Length: 140
Image 1: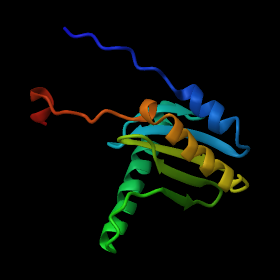
Image 2: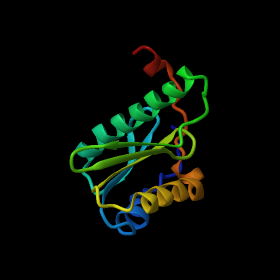
Image 3: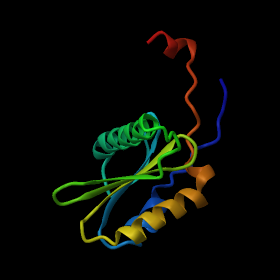
């Protein structure tokens, strides 16, 4: 049996740096690029699961748009406007995606600046190791 170091829960960072710092921010989710939530604040696990999947899918689809027009550079951010919420998504560290739901009244510039700064400043902590197939999971 191998031991591994415990994973630090950075939900408090999402809460302090985004939810408490930018008025109108409702929730934040850090997901692995495969759609699995790692840390979340302002939502339950049941809410974080679909938000993570949608955020990673949105970032992936947007990357395909760049490839289709001959600009395969990485996506900086994606924003989706709903009737009463705005969904912001950025890449965060290696294999990580940071997503935030906010009210339309949010200061979008301030929020996205804080998201990018958080992703830059905590790149190592927000990165998600790539999942490696094992004989048990490869059979799926």
